[in-house]
Amino acid sequence: MAPTASKLRVEPELGSLPKRALAQYLLFLKLYPVATKAVSSGILSALGNFLAQMIKKQKKDSQSLEVSGLLRYLVYGCPLSHYLYLFMEYWVPPEVPWASVKRLLLDRLFFAPTFLLLFFFFMNFLEEVSLCSPGCPGTHSVDQGKNASVFVAKMRSGFWPALQMNWKMWTPLQFININYVPLQFRVLFANMAALFWYAYLASLGK
Image (cartoon, one colour):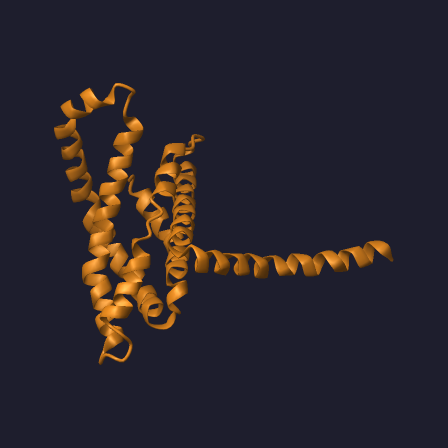
């Protein structure tokens, strides 16, 4: 009977793990809201990049894993969305007429293109840093024109398709998020959806 009793004790403990994890997350969210959201965003971004690399490996039958890509997405954990939702709650409070539509239009027409532009710029910057040699300052100044042209080429080939996909994927999700999800959970909700979104962006070769 001892093994059975032990198993019964372990199962409730396993069932309580998600509850304990959620309680710990809520505690950190209360004490360190920006840092907690930035860390969770960075981790999920890196997971999205990992997922994209796994898809590429299956298509190309490659065995290599680009660790620098994972690190770039991990560093990208951006707390701007934290301030976005606070700003939106203040600028367009729920009692305003057509608040849900106004919030959605504000997010889709202004914040989505701006965030995507920052994503492309930040990722390009991190790629340059990762490729920088110990004697980088001199060579970097010489290649500034070349790096700028590469960035412009990436923007032309990837920005508009990514923005279109953003509008298709995120519009219904953001409508739910900014109007029905409690304020403190909106970044987490977006981060969970962003796991697949960053996998798509990484698949563009960014």
